[in-house]
Length: 141
Image 1 (cartoon, rainbow, N blue to C red):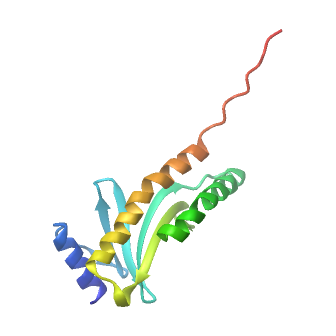
Image 2 (cartoon, rainbow, N blue to C red; image 1 turned 90 degrees about the vertical axis):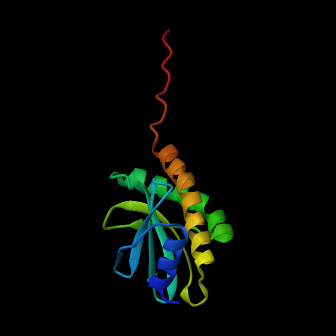
Image 3 (tube, one colour; image 1 turned 90 degrees about the horizontal axis):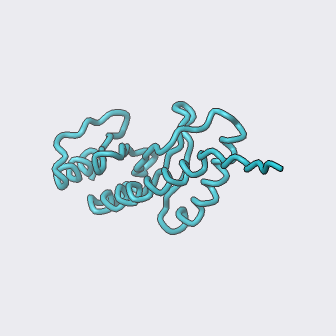
């Protein structure tokens, strides 16, 4: 089944109405708050979702990325969630993928649910990482 046919079947099952396809993909809103892009490339079906802006400061950017990569490793093995950077938009994103050749509407549902469920987790991790450090307490003599 083609990408557009699969996505239209997914949209019909979830009563989403007509989808707007562009650049081999389409965008969906999950739970009225998570913007997800579904696309196909090189025989793979991808579900992609931004979750945070990259810090401008290189030191903060590197520290955030190291913390997120460390937390992402177990998810990569168990849930196939990958962390990535969108250099054009200066954002952090997560994605998951599956081969187009064996994909079903149920498989699309699983991928979208996995990305949607992990979006909040990554968002919390990014917010915790960017929280200002507690100021040192000064003791007066």
